[in-house]
Amino acid sequence: MDLLREFVPFFIGGFLPPLFMLVINKLWSGQRKFLYVCVPSLVLGVSTAMVMGELAFGFQAGATAVLIDSSTLFLGTQLGYHLVWKPLLAMLTQPGKSSQRVS
Image 1 (cartoon, rainbow, N blue to C red):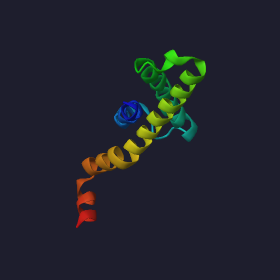
Image 2 (cartoon, rainbow, N blue to C red):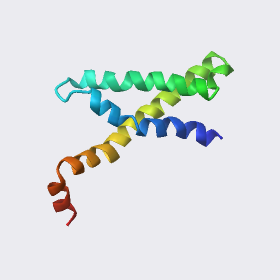
Image 3 (tube, rainbow, N blue to C red):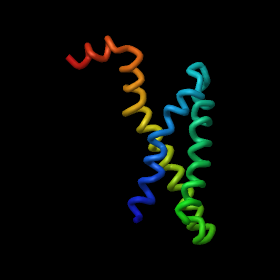
């Protein structure tokens, strides 16, 4: 059960990058992009901790659970973007270049 508690935020974070790709403009500064990814990760981390019942054990345990869930969710967004969504988007938008790399 503990493995599931830690995997759920990571799994949710893996599916957030397409939403962020729609919202975030390429011309924005790095700080603004980070803010647009970090704040939803924090909100979803709190929500995930609440749904899992991790906030019922007191402030210290709840704060730790929120920190872990938010960090895991943020990690999932970054890994999902760089390992899955960015290459997939490049392959779909430039099919000639991706096929040349493979062969």
